[in-house]
Amino acid sequence: MVTNDAPVYRIGQGYDIHRLLPGEPLWVGGIQIDSPVGSLAHSDGDVILHSLIDALLGACGLGDIGEFFPPSDIKHANRPSIEFLNEVLPLLNGVGASKACYQVANVDITVFLEKPSLKSYKLRIREYLAAVLNRPLDCVTVKAKTAEGFPPIGTQDAVAASVTVLLVQV
Image (tube, rainbow, N blue to C red; front, side):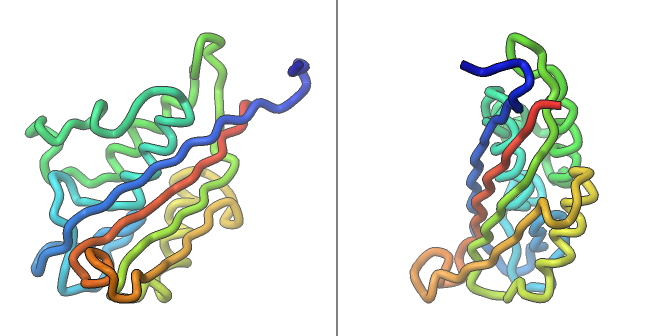
């Protein structure tokens, strides 16, 4: 039985993958990455932000990014993904039948990208997301993995991200 003084948590998980093409910009976690290839997408194709949005919406029981920002809707074409996230964050206030308010407790992110290396970008991505989410830096983790040549990520044909978010009722 849950008592009134026990914290209430919600967990969400998101995943996104985009094809990489020469000449397209590569946005990862709100940061533009210096790369000869970038995401082919209706919006800017930021796999971290898309995954984070799905994780937040899932934790709140509200569906997924495609329901809120369908790629078939021309008004979302070429939009920066941060705009989508900024529209989703207020939804953490008023969740469920009790209309409870939640805040992000922590975010754990894994990016799958063969090249370029994200080593020099990880701290900037963490700092950016911590600021956007209004959380301390240690509440946002970014890990980068390669696929060691295994397609489509290892052959540099795609970039993907997986995000897990923990929300706590406030």
